[in-house]
Each structure stands twice: as structure tokens, then as C-alpha cells.
Image (cartoon, rainbow, N blue to C red; front, top):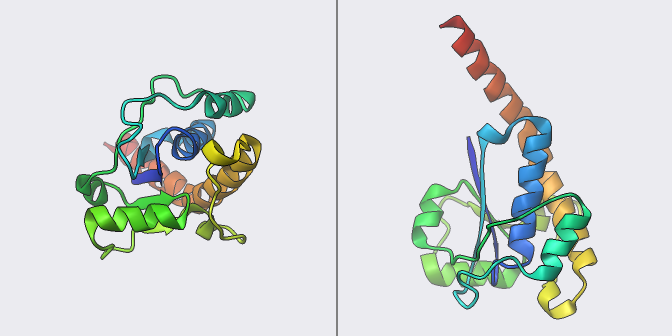
Amino acid sequence: MKHILFVCHGNICRSPMAEFIMKKMARTEGVTEWFDIASAATSNEEAGNPVYPMARLELAEHGIGCMGKTSRQFTPDDYQKYDMILCMEQSNINSLMQIIDSDPDNKISLLLDHTDRPHDIADPWYTRDFRAAWKDIYAGVKAVFDSLLPQAKADLASSAAHDTAD
């Protein structure tokens, strides 16, 4: 199982969009049980708030729901739990370093560092361009998901073969 956490400033736009995009990809490929996918914020200013309406609308335009998701702040325990911590912009990484001091296991990266176009994903809360955010987030999530899918399928096939042999 791969534990993945997406992180942005408030956990109401970019990181929940990434979370639910990847959850849909996992469902579509039939590998949901291999993934533990969540999202969190670097700040607590939006704690408990739902996904921002414009982000919900952008997800809905692509057939993705996010009902029930509320913002929560990243904690030091998250560093222990998650294998990959994917941030939307460099300032998110800087903020995480104030919470956990260091990244000894090299778990933290920018989402778009996993693509051939590494850069920050602009915060649509400020830019109001949720379509551009979607495109960047989708590209990053797809790159990460595609890199993990062969291992997910292999592990699940091995587990199914083992269960059948018992």
C-alpha cells in the first residue's frame, strides 16, 4: 500500500483537488485498496472548512465529487504515516519544514517535480483561474499515479494469487 498526502496552504482548493483526482484514477483502474490518499494544509486558517465552491465546481465538471472533505492542518504524525508528501508550491515545503524541521526520508516534493514541467502550481484562491490549476494538478497527479500503477497492479495480483492459494 502506498500512503500519499497532497499539501497546499489552506486545503480547500489545490490539495483536495489532487486528492480526489487521484482517488478517481485509483477507482477507475481498480486499485483503490492499494492506495491511502488524503490531503492537508500547511496552515490552520481554513481548518474544518469544506472544499472551496469553485474547486468543487471544477472537480464536478470532470465528474469528480468531494463531498464531506474538510480542511485539516498537517501534523508531525503525517510525516510518519505518509510515504509521499506532494506539495503544490515551494512555500508549502518551506511551511512544512517549520512543522517537522527536516525531511530525512526524502518524502516531500513538489507535485509537478514528477512531470517534465516542474514548477509551482499557482493558488487559484488568488488567481481565480481554477481551470489552469486543474490542468497543472491533473498533470502532476497523472504522472505520480502512472509511475505507481504497475507496482499497485503487481502487488494486488500477487495478493490475489496468495489468497487463492490458501
